Amino acid sequence: MAEISKEKMDEIIYDFKRAGPWSGTIAQRKEKFANCFARLCEASGLDVDGWIMEFDIPNTFREWTNSGNSSVSFLDHKVVMRGRLSVVTLLHEFGHIYLRDNQLDNDTVQDFAVKLFEEYFPEKMTQLDKDPETGMLKKRQ
Image (cartoon, rainbow, N blue to C red; front, side, top):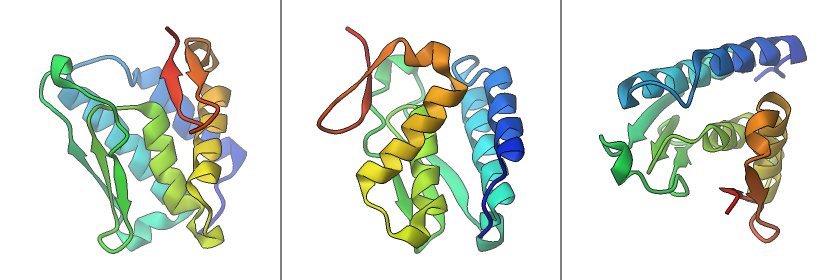
């Protein structure tokens, strides 16, 4: 596994941002998420392990729940996005894979995801609050 350069990370995440991860049909959004994940895996050398992204997402927006049950399977080299599509969750699940050599806890992985989200999506960050206990981001009430 290789460290992703800042320039490559900028390219991947800004391309994802320009594609509009919050816009389009569910199928179009899934494609954008899968593409970003594949590019992150490629840039870090994880693609040689055959990592894939799968979706367990309801087919209508009104049925979407939270993404807290999304997961990584190291045995199957698979990330499963569940409940709804969340950019922070995408970055979080990628963080589990990317940072795994350090055997980091969930809080550290969440910090990794939040820092990336804050850097690349500052305009969205202003709409969110960080739960002090869990570190999870939630829409401001």
